[in-house]
Length: 511
Image (cartoon, rainbow, N blue to C red; front, side, top):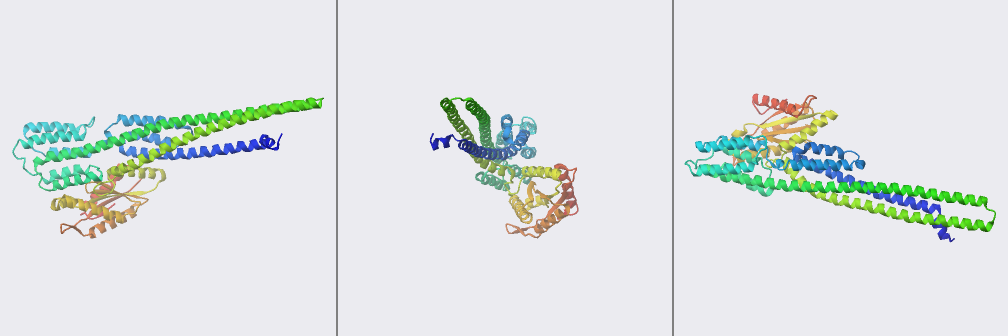
């Protein structure tokens, strides 16, 4: 036997080859685990965005989030089952997330309640108001708007008085309705044009056209939402299929590992049997030539078993590599899809939680952040404070200078607040002229000082609109979280402090 053959057949050679194969498979499996971890992190971020877009699926999102936070090595089937449940919830709640919510319906109800129509039209109007007041099985708001537009078109074009101008209060309600729209930049200009028009002398005959424009904007929002919903559903369906496939590949790879180990054990037993037989032959041999033949035969059998084992082991290792490679490829494809979808949904998420007028966070963003801070407080006892800010005599500014002046005041107050507050503070437009500031890791004394500094900066600022000086001040109410608080109780205490500041003459901070 040549030195090369002896080297190939040597135990040291096979031992090194085995360890090399094990190391390669471990590296491949580590790469798979990294890709799997990245993918599941992407899924976790995406479903948080889904929760904001679709509040009705919060329970399904929370269950899936808990699974994703666990060790994923053995729960891919559970994750897949949870995704199926989330898909079912999304399909069941189709269209709900696209609705503008109770505030928009409330503004439309207020506006319609102020209209004076003939007895016949008033009956039709009451029917519309009943449709708006329904809590269950709500009709799409844009459908009601279009019906109202048709009703008012018939009313104002067939009766005298259609040239009467809208009152400031009526125009203001329609502007507040428009403020509920979260629109992309290309449609914000159209929305602002409608607001500007409402600041001028709009007649009753022009109301139907304005309402139809609002309905068109809502229709666009709903279509965009449905497109995003379909993208999310498609991604979750693909994720579910890939996770099932991944689970099968993982199970298959585990079975292959077990089978390989079983074959190695069997191979060791066979070689051991040959060695024992060879030892027995040597021990009982009486003839040297016969011993040589027996040893040669035994060694031939050993080499044959080694070659068979080598070929089978090589085939199994390649099969395992192929399966792990398939897993990595599927994970990379899904991770790429997740990144693309996350980018689109992140843009939608930012639109969903930002106030389009001021650039501050909106009520939805406030609710989400407040929930996070309260959970953090109850878990780690980390204090934080809430400041509720109200612009003094804001209605008078709108009445005296117009809605555009009021918008400018809101924007400038937001800019000053952002300059004065820390990066960790969370500024949200709570509604109308009211803002809320969440101040993490801040006790009452420090929050009062920060709120008073903001109040002074706004009081000293010189507001000008159309060459007119506009005096602007704010009142603030401050409260620090305590153990018995939930988000409503904390806000109520801060709001009571704000009421105290206003009652004492405004332009004050109370806590």
